[in-house]
Length: 340
Image (cartoon, rainbow, N blue to C red):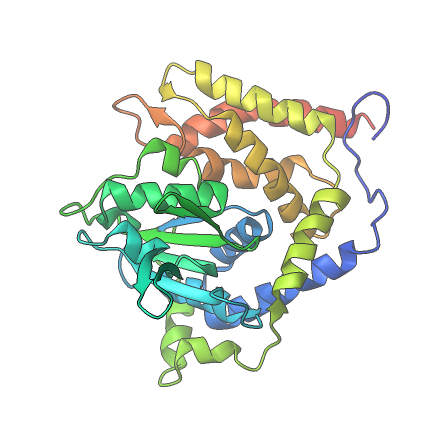
């Protein structure tokens, strides 16, 4: 980037590990696409969230492949068992679920005459929180601590989760009875909210063609990635993918435009802007770039801000509100790119 603040239009020189990071993303993408057909856009967003150290909320009707997507991602990890940490675990949220069913509990051992902590299913690298909006606020509070701090508190004692901790939560939009709406602070902890629509006809036909082979077996012959490779990828992307000051200014201007829009009752938080930066970097690398471009902002903004803003009654499509606020920012960025 030059002294006028313009956005680079070419490579700025890749650090040594950026090629390896790109290879890790390519491996994850190929394996997941082998299992999940017709969801390339969703797979891209989920993998971006994974390497950006965020969490994802998937929403769609039952049978759309949300659970299969989460399980396939867990199966893509090559993890050596280390204590209570598993590669993948699934938690089915129900109205009678207790916080201890998620976090674990202290159990009294007669042999040692003391209490010992037994970890719950939250102790995993990838956690599928299935139908997360069907459980009580107490369980939601426990999940919020885990997602925000990567730790759980049981009997006033804190237990750390692993550095690689990724939550894929699902909820069904039409399942109204017996649900508890997620509070705004917890929604704010999800980097993306993704609505999974019905797949195209050709893709749906391909799913049926694979029968009777289970879909999760479609990626068995493809390589996996290790925990260390994923953590290394996160660090390399944060250090090696360039974010021009003009990009940061555009994000702040976008957030301020949303807050001042008459159709918006509650705007986006500053946290959402901070969480968006590594996501933009990850998306840039997936596109083969070592710098963030306006296209990255346009692609990710609806999924980052859509579940964070609250609009006035009568607003049907939040994405239209976001697009209107984003348009002037993209125009300014476009001019800066052309002026280089």
